Image (cartoon, rainbow, N blue to C red; front, side, top):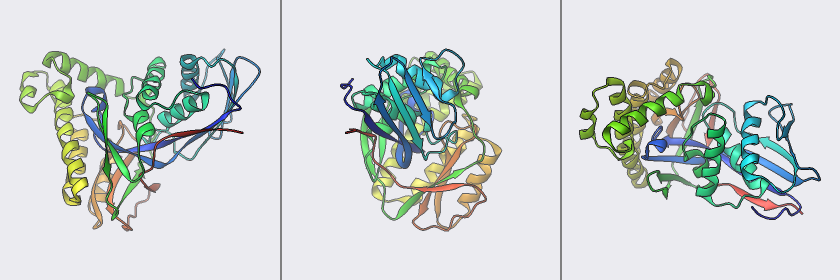
Length: 338
């Protein structure tokens, strides 16, 4: 923790995952990028011991520690404050231009910005672990990807993350492409989705193989007799390989290969991991028929949320859905208020 000071202003970006979903908690690799939408938290110390939080996305004011039921964002805030245990209370104002519940990591952006505003030192892995612990405390067993990219991203680059070591490598985004995110119109909350079931299936498969799935090989898959566990493991093993191939294709400017890998990733998430929806499948199919779209896939945990597409810059993408053309942004920051 930093000293109380006169207050802090912190910002954390959302993220879109270009490829590599459900690989993080399996010790594989992923290639997300921070985006130019995010959450800003202004924190000013007060005289009491509690923390008051107001947001621009919910009229309810949260008083922490809480004495009664809280909305999901305030439950997460409560868990974060309990972990940090600030020496004095205060008041936090939260502003966000990041859509909630569509798979752009609004929860992790909120958590990272609040932690930094409360005075936690901006060390990427440590902050990411605190976010993971807080999410776990409210029943959402997330991986480290979202808070880690929010902390460690660099402008103009995606971030290749190896979750077996937490090593990261910036991968340049070619300047002649843009990333388009399309909202499926179906919001979802991970604590009310089969996300935890998928994690437990992966853990069961890993116990049988004696290795985290991100480090397993295609030859290992034959040792899984249960067809459901084999499908889950197949996605993780093949997705990990796709991520590495995609990072190389992006670095070398081979957008045709990169696009093909994105579409193959979606097929695997749909068929082997079974986290897609008919709406997500339709959007991916529509995008892939467009001349200036190299490839598309669902992004995030699935069960709703968004599709991400790799497009030629200025592509004429037209769908009856909300969409955002996002740029690869830098990571979170914090500064003192005078």
